[in-house]
Length: 316
Image 1: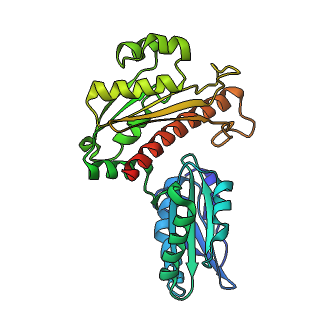
Image 2 (image 1 turned 90 degrees about the horizontal axis):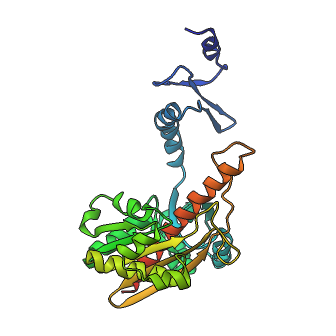
Image 3 (image 1 turned 45 degrees about the horizontal axis):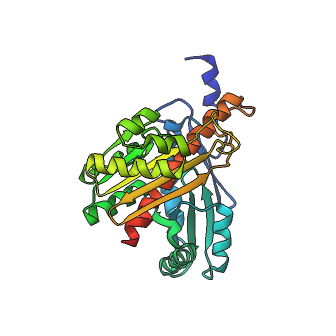
């Protein structure tokens, strides 16, 4: 055994040891002044095992002393600050936490005390009314799961045409088990010649408006719908960066379109977010930041396309 591991045999007095079945560092549980303190190793696999086997049972036992109910509502297409403004009129007494992420802002509701379950339901309903269609699901439910459920319920077939997202929309849709019931397939038309030859985008459209335009996005959606015989088609085209932007068409500019027999829509988005530093050193390089922003633009574009589709399905 390496000498450095000997330090892991030293434990504080008056603690309960939590077994580590995947490593050598034990976890600790200390109760003092009616407070419970847990110390766990940082290795994800080891921490997760101790959390499930050592922490959760204690917390669950404490929770049974006081009725505590929680629910997470998932939103997309709205910023944390805008959501906060909408929920100012919330009347029910509850703890509401805003958890922003790539896909949107999760709203975690916690209610304690008597009749917590009923009060949680009332609070959730108030939030749904105040937030409107921005709420799409609950707990860990993804937007693609909700979209898939609606497509299956309505018996509709979907196809996608993607440029800047590079197949990400199709990837998300096919991550859902059973998606073959409603998803036909997609075309990644990154080059203009593929947009023309496969999707039927007119050369004059590309010359006059460019690949990143409302006109091109709509023709891409029409083309893949016709090509694959789908009821509905989505398309996405844009500039994911970090290069390729111009003053007229900056990095982050995207168009998402929907084509159906009874409807055509196109939305313009300009993602300003610089990309953040998550997952990178404290002073990330310009290359790392550019890559991070590129991934965010692609993800947000896929989210916007799926949100557009969900709005169409729910309206019908």
